[in-house]
Length: 185
Picture 1: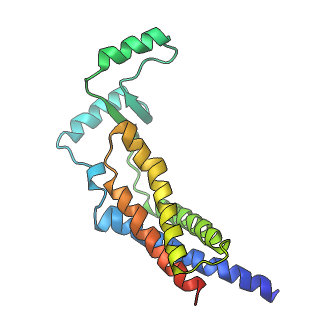
Picture 2: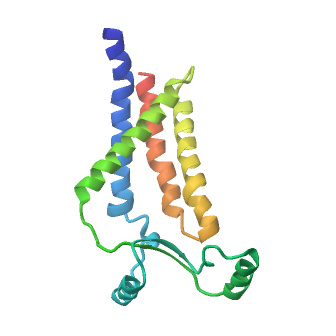
Picture 3: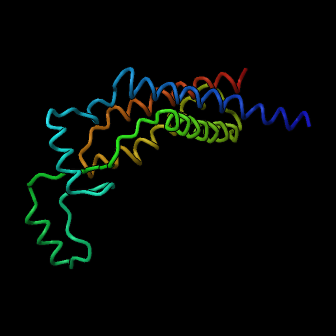
């Protein structure tokens, strides 16, 4: 029983620590430091835009313009030619602005704990998880997440991913530093 407890302790305490590192960094990144400001720009026309959207859309995510579902290959090609060089948008429209921060914070922290557990488990599988390996492996995890989601999306949808790149380096690097220390103390 004590060896099971010790094994759980070896995974649970560092998982909690990494979860807290990720959670605190996300608050700093999105709120306190506003690193993602380029992804949430203000427009003084927001009321007019929201009014038009509320009259034209149901809740959902949209890529505009887009050929109608069921269009033939020829129709899609003609559509692409017609809209080349013209404005386009990605719209995530919701019918009600929900300010339930508690539920979102709890859900975010649970996700951070899961990510922390996966990192701790991954490092625990290494024969020698010294400081260097822990930091490099943690940064690799952060970069994989960055490259496969935000950066890849920016290739197609021309978004700004600088904030996500910082998010791939800082909290994952800090997590690696902590885990390198924890696993070798």
